[in-house]
Length: 396
Image 1 (cartoon, helix red, strand yellow):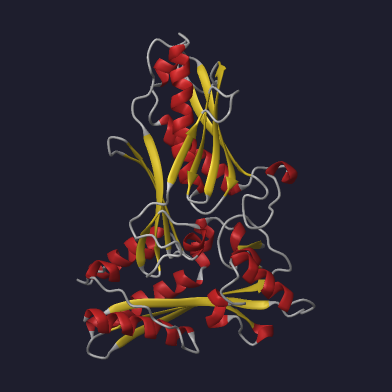
Image 2 (tube, one colour):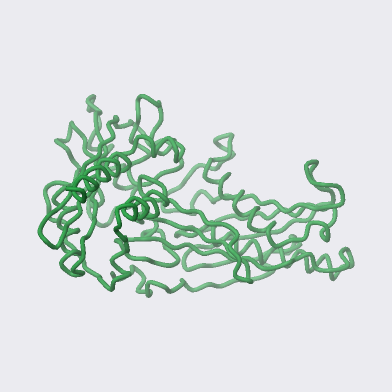
């Protein structure tokens, strides 16, 4: 699969770090990872939070995106009078990552706050913030040593972060926005310079990373079946999704990979069906409105097409298909009913999640926690049904 910017699957975007970009902060840098630009500033204050043991210091972080860091303006968190769940989760990640490389006793009773402000976001803002945040932190600590405030450097290691994901069933490194928004699995990795793993964050489309890959492998390994990605067996097929149903598209993809590899192959297809639009966007959910639209553009077009429509019933649908070289196949389908909201709501999720309202929970998919979403999602329901049918097939 050709990447949008022409990179190889395992190639990073160009990285540039400009140190000391802010003359007032004790440490600062501007990090550019492709078209993602983040300003990172480290501020030193005397004193540590109450929860910190006596004689030790603390490193924390704050994260924010400028209103026009994205393709469309977003409201500032202060305008909403609360920090968005996404920003809160990201700044906790940054803080945890940076604390992993600092000896708090050597830092002494001081607090270093790393402010990460995204000037322009094109995917990977949290990983860029971790890497840039470390540079700002190390510069601030170096200044404390040079000024005689600290007798020695408190750093125990260095840290950096990068994203990876599965897009179109292919493993890719350092996802840009277009790749991230359509990824089947998105993974953020934080490691030290010594190769030690600090943290992994993984999510999948509709169910968590562990369900999307690891659990699928666990399920089939119990039946004596090994699961690998098509890229792991040297298969790279580009399947045109010409089916009229989700089941047909899942079958087309599974059959193509099976024929190319000579092995049983599993594929899925999913989308949103709106009753008032005769099931649209349906199998065209990912292409609704044409290739020029992103997720926001697609759900805004859908809301515009539903203007004045009182029947808001809709459902997410997922179809899974496994094709065998002997011509057999195992199929399963899962659905999640809901209604179409009148306006987007929620900071999390992807695709049509901000406008898919679940009446029983009184929230959109974009407002649900991963646990809430996984418990009712169309993909989770499809996976459950697929597991049962596959077991029956293998035991017959």
